[in-house]
Amino acid sequence: MHSITAFGTFSGTSGSGTATLLHPLALRRADRSDLQGVLTLLADTAEWLHSKGVSQWPRGGFGPERIEPLIEERVLYLLDDELRYLDPDEDVPPVATIALDGHADPEFWAPADDPGSALYVHKLAVARPWAGTGLGDALLDWAGDTARATGRRWLRLDCAKRNQELQDYYRRRGFQHVRTVDLPHRASGALFQRPAESAMVAAFRDLTLPELIGA
Image 1 (cartoon, one colour):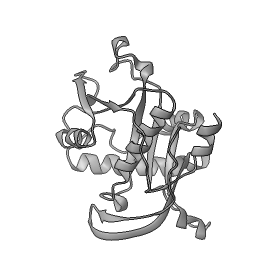
Image 2 (cartoon, one colour; image 1 turned 45 degrees about the horizontal axis):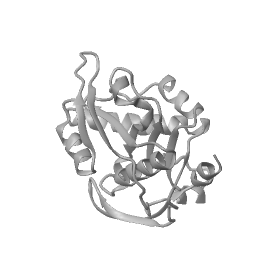
Image 3 (cartoon, one colour; image 1 turned 30 degrees about the horizontal axis):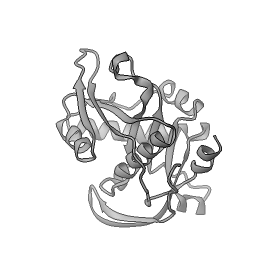
């Protein structure tokens, strides 16, 4: 059974300096009203990647035609700062986003990989003010737990072929490099997987848990 995610606050060190973040966070499925906030978060992340010389995502982010299907399929998740609800008139972007589904990219994952044995992480991004707080780690742990709870053996992802720093990060998080698929029209292609394992994630409240249990 999917482990219960505890509610709590989170503190850590941001990428731009030391900061104490004592905000309650909650994970939920994105809906149509979230589209602009997601596009903004992904565009900001893409710009930051390009500033570091990484072109995995298109500069300026993704168009709505790439994100709307993920929302419609209910596979895009948002991490919210729950204090945003104290001022409903304030437009507060999501803290982080992650897509998790069973769609194996056919240009990367071959039939011999048993694509159905895994869930796949896409569009993982953490807003810059929250960078360095471990939220990316927590979302990957949640994704691995979800994969295990749905009977999958693996959690998989692909990342930029030339981003050694990001590849090293995934290795530190327990992912193993499967292979690199070098296609001239794709910046991504470094394939990673790790076993789908149970994890207790205390960084945020999981509002998707009742849906999973009732599925």
